[in-house]
Amino acid sequence: MIKRILIVDDAPVTLTMAKQQAEKEGYVVYVAGNGKEGLKIVRSKKIDLVITDVVMPVMDGVDFFNALKSDPSTMHIPVIVITDSMVIQESFRALGVNDFLAKPFDGSVLIERIQRIKKLELGPHRHGKVVIIGAGTNDGVLEMRRLLEKNGCSVVLSSNGVDSIAKVLRVVPHIVLIDVMLTDVSAKEVIKALRSFIKLQDMKILVYTFLSPEKMFNVEAVEQLKDSKNACMDAGGTDYIGRFSALTFIDSMHKYWIHE
Image (cartoon, rainbow, N blue to C red):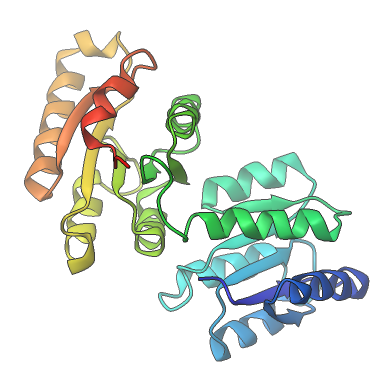
C-alpha cells in the first residue's frame, strides 16, 4: 500500500505544490532537490512511490532511476517520471517506468497518477492482475494490453526480463505472460527465477510468441522456438499459448481468468 511518497525536483514551486496536494490526501511526503538527495531519502525511509523530474543538477532523473533499479532493496519501488518530452517518455517506458506527469501539472492530475499506481496494488480487477513481459513495448504488446484491459484485467508491462522480476514481485499478479524469445535474458531463466519465490509458485505463467507467419515456415526459426518453448515448460511455465493473434487471444485466455 502506498503511504510514503518521495518527490524529486529542483523546482521549489513544483515541490511545494505537489507536497501539499499529496499531504491533503493523507500521504507522508518527502522532497528532494536532485537525485543524490533522493537516494539518501530512499535508503533511509521506507518509500512506497517515487515521483521524479528528469533535468536536475548534481544527479539527474536518469541516473537516479538507474540507481534505484540497480539496487535490490529499491528496485521494486514504482516510479512516476515528470517530463513532457515524448522521446524521453518512450526511453523511460522501455526501462520500465510506471507512469508520467507533464509539466505544468495541477494537484488533481498528480493525485490521479498516484491512484493509478495504487490500483495495481489494491487487488484484482474483474479478471485479475496480469504482467506482460515482452521484448520492448512493440505494437503486439500494446495490443495485448488493450485487449486485456478491455476484458477487465489490470495490466503491467515489463520491457525486458531483468526488469520483470522486480515488477512481478511488487504486483504479485494472477497471470504472467512472457515472450518465449526475450532478448536480454532467456525466458527460461526468468521463469526459473520467478518460481524460486514461494509466493509465486502457484502463479500462472503463460508463454507466447510474436514470431511472424513467414518465419513459421523457416525450419531453423521453428526449431529454435520449439527448444525455447520446451525449456520454458521445464523451468515451470504453466502453458504455451502459441503465436499472439488479436482474433484468438482472448478466447485462449478464458480458462485462466480470475472469475468473480
